[in-house]
Structure formats: C-alpha cells, structure tokens
Image (tube, rainbow, N blue to C red; front, side, top):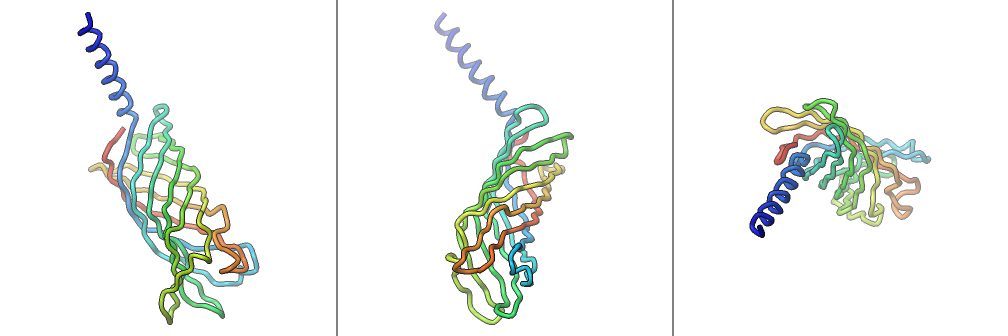
Length: 199
C-alpha cells in the first residue's frame, strides 16, 4: 500500500510538471535598436537623430489561459542619440540592462501582440564627439529608464521568430548636471529569436 502511495504521488508530481511545461515557453533573441532622444523643453530646437545599436538576451513566458500569457525578458540594450547643435556634434551611447514585463495575446498560433512596462538600468554612458575621444558621462544620466513596450511577434519555421517593437520612454533619463532640459529615450526594435522551449 505504501509503494502504491509513493507511485501515486510521483505520478501526480510528474503530471503537474508536464502540465506546467505545456504552458511554458523560453528562448534567446538579438537584433538592432534604432534609438533617439526627445524633449518637451527648449531643447526641442536641438537636432537629434537616430542612433543604431543592438540588443541581445533571453525571454520566458507562461500561458495563463490558451491565448494569454505573461512574458519576462532580460536584455542588454544600446540606446542614445546622435546630437548636432552649435555646442556639440557627436553621439551619446548608452548601455542598459532592460527587463520588459509583458502581457501577451496570441490570437493565432503563429502571431502574438504584446505590451507592458520595461525597466532599464544604466550600465555605461559614453559621449563620443565627432572630433574627439570618448568621455564618460554617467553623471549626465539617471540610473533608471522606465518605458512602455508595444510590439508584435511572428513565429517562423525552424523555431525562429521575428519581433517588431516600439519602446516609448516614460521618464526623464538625463540629469541637470548634463542637460538643462529633460530628455527621454525612444527605441524601435527588430529582433530575431530562437525558441528553446515552446508551448
């Protein structure tokens, strides 16, 4: 009787793990960032242009119900902008660890749309003048960047997926020691991912 009870417990545990795994998904991803910075202050007259960088990391998601999942990601991501005004010509290159927390709706097996907050933590900030050497500008920027993510993802053959995403910065990321006006990050992202674990 004791042996039967042990096997029953093991069977229930195994069934629970299989059930959870059927709802889980995970993978790795990488791609390009087309980033810029915007302000609503007097610096609107400053000319900022897009800066191309990259991002890379991993993700996992869990389906609450058949078509709705929560997705957590961990990404290394480059942001910033090209600057061109009377005082400075060059680029601000910023490196963040980003953690998007997304709600994912999957109306079709091969397509999902997603949205949610993203929390970024500044790791490195360099200013690169067109005619000079790199300058450390960590004190020009706040340590955190909060954004709103809106995106769509398509599943491709061979466990690949492609993601298009727009990230709108919600908080001012610059400090008064670096810039008089407050500036926010904006990023357009294109990613290619590989599904290690699929729902």
